[in-house]
Length: 159
Image 1 (cartoon, rainbow, N blue to C red):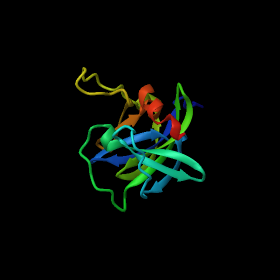
Image 2: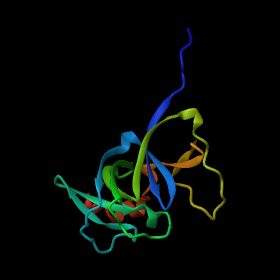
Image 3: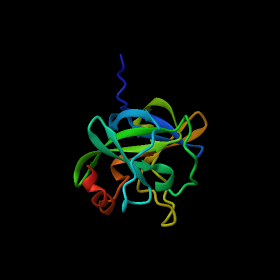
């Protein structure tokens, strides 16, 4: 009798500008349809505003803008993925805007490829690694690195 010692992790996958991304399912609190947000002045350009989620004020980050991708109109498929994020400032909740949610995948940790080194031209600090699934690449994000210390500080009063 053999035992399988491979470790797996579940990832919620979603679409962004025609590419597949994934986040650790344990970081996901909920998935919501897009709804208008309250715009807050003097926040980073990629923070669309805030939502009131059951009494909590949650900053909403547009991942297209965060990653320097072409912007797009929000549609019926646009979603906000509410994530629990750790930072040196503590634990907090943010919402990230994605084009559409795809699936939940069980991924063997051994099958996660290291993020390629693209030099200084491409910022890969948000990436945990990559995974090949059905002939496509899924970029696995490290949600704890989506905001740097200065950005957290600039929206700290919202938490």
